[in-house]
Length: 336
Image 1: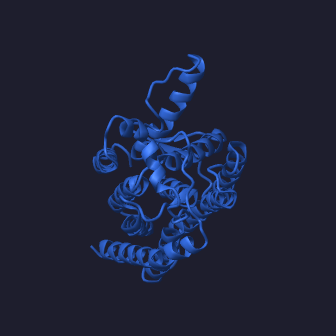
Image 2: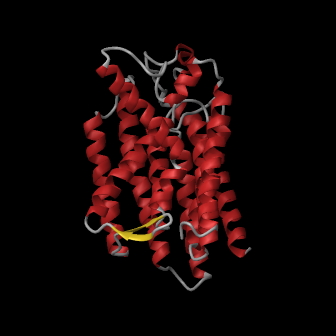
Image 3: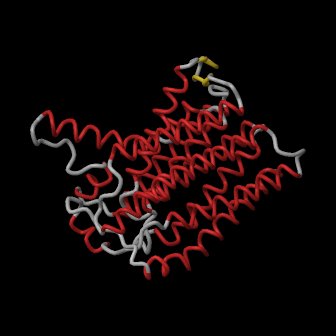
């Protein structure tokens, strides 16, 4: 009950700061003329979104960082001081900020050049793998542990391969979250449910109190952003926001040693990424044929006539179902 009250307080603070910052940030971005350039090969009706301020992810980055830092420090002061789990949270927050920084550079290049091209794919990947390497090194310093929890099996030690595999997982999911940001409210809504179920899982595990607060800050910040991003969006999160959210979701799971469970909770993001990979591969192999009308797959459903609101609701519900399954696996001890 006590942890729940702390989590509620942190979520409210994150929501409030994010929503209030948006009130001032959006006019500021308008004055700087930091508007989104819409891709030529995207859905034609997205052209009316041209010029909508981007880099709005800054508002929930501020909200989540302040709420997480204040919540964890105050919680630690009332529960015997900072412990190793608290350090995992701050290392995770640093990882999210590093990815947000990469996104900020990418957005800045796009805005200054007034075209929807920022960092090259290679530049992004190099920076993202560097961020993942720094994160894994810091986690190694906090806890020299190369084990992961496998359902129905228990702990499995991957040894040195742990770092290679986990770097690929981290970069893959961060990019998957980035690809999911394509229509109003989609990434924020999906990430809200991902954070919500991470919070519930951390609460069930019992000894991860600060992780509950970390996830609560993420959920609150996403809701605060949706005040401005829900259809019709007054602001986009940009790569600044989507890459930060990718790092956030990953670091929550890693702090709880739930790396495999992350793949289930993040399944919606991964399906978005795989739809792009399948589309590109099939297009090249068949010299021009397509599996989907457009990728990522949320655009396919748009081309099929689904409204943005319907896509957000269905994708969010699917994420909630995946999160519920993950929660039940933890409750019944399949993954502990």
